[in-house]
Amino acid sequence: MHPLFLVIASTLLAGLAMPIGAAFASREQFKPEWLEKEFRHGVMAFGGGALLSAVALVLVPEGITRFKPWSASLFFIAGGLSFMFVDIILKKIDTAASQLTAMLSDFIPESIALGAAFATGKSSVFVLAGLIALQNLPEGFNAYCELKASSSYSSRTIVLIFAVMALLGPLVGVSGYLWLQDNPAIVAAIMLFASGGILYSIFQDIAPQAKLETYWAPPMGAVLGFVLGMAGFMMTP
Image (cartoon, rainbow, N blue to C red; front, side):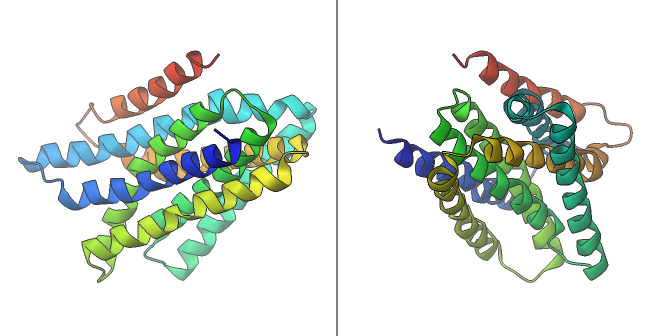
């Protein structure tokens, strides 16, 4: 199969995890209430674990191969600062879609990096695609809950919005594939930039919200999310 079709298919499938997570959130209902609460926090922690594995096992190892320590650190910090500034702006305008914006802020640079990684023949591309899908499931779940609680949109409308947003994956992924295949240093910089932003998001948004007083099971979601990424990384030839 031509790599371009693989880029389109992998980024689309990774993006469709967002509406799938939203659709699941629109239907899930656990009784008693404590189980529902614990499940939601577990899903959030799972997403954090998957994100952390993407940073630690794929994005940073691939990104640092093209740079000296100081320049790699610069791109990484720039990603964290950029996500921080977006967070500050969202707070100031008091938007009801902070989780949604954070989800897109992760998904777009990751899809660019994924498309470019296909162009450069990286062996870890399918692991990265799987990890993006894994993180998009709980992010879609959490963004749906936020929008549903703070807007008048129906469940069907929110899921449809997320499905349309999934099309951004192939669009930016193909752009990365066509324009960055001869620029591996730019691909590495994007990976490091996304890594810094993702790490900021984990500790600013996901980890604090995943904690639940007097409950100890939700953090195991982070362990499971990370171990899935680790297993996928170890199976990569």
